[in-house]
Figure 1: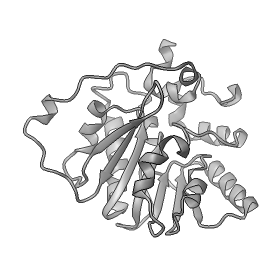
Figure 2 (figure 1 turned 60 degrees about the vertical axis):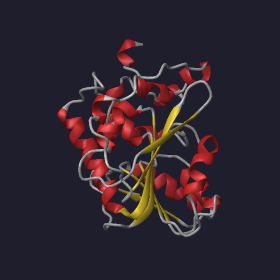
Figure 3 (figure 1 turned 180 degrees about the vertical axis):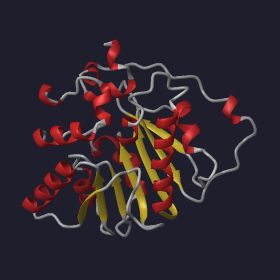
Figure 4 (figure 1 turned 120 degrees about the horizontal axis):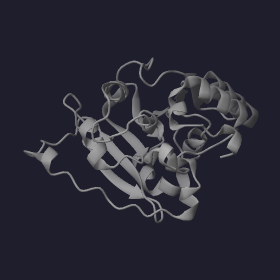
Length: 247
């Protein structure tokens, strides 16, 4: 990431105008690594016939990567920033790439019919909603409301047995309270990827929720230790797992 697009504070990530300005300058930035780092986790979920929604695409190239992986059932990428969407459309047109539809849309109010997609994927997008959280154990009501609106929208647009993939810094003891909220029918599983420092890869399958064990909320795992490589410390991704005011 170049210095001229770096935010002054993490709160800038919540400002739509910041993203318009950033995408006007930046051609490509792959949040939380590109497909090559988690292909072994995502590939088993892919097939030629599935329809895919990427939430918060920015200037990622994940849509094109999924085409190369053989997904042919339709790929839709959405972002709140018209600048990002227009630039991605221009890029796809210049490449002669078809099969990826890019739409200006708010992840908190998605304009799709119920049960529209086989797979929904977000990569770092949900993490943006947490940047103003001082205490991750007790996020403020507005943050909780927005997270739930995002998840409810994703749950709605997933087809029966559809899968939601969330790639994030968020550890299970912080994310399970949202993923396992009443009303969601999906199962919740997770893996990690990365060398030295781990990203979390959540797989939530609609209609496959298992009965919750009694008292599971009191038996969540302790926070894992974090060992960051030098290259990770230089990555903008790092800003999502710390309070930048402490740097």
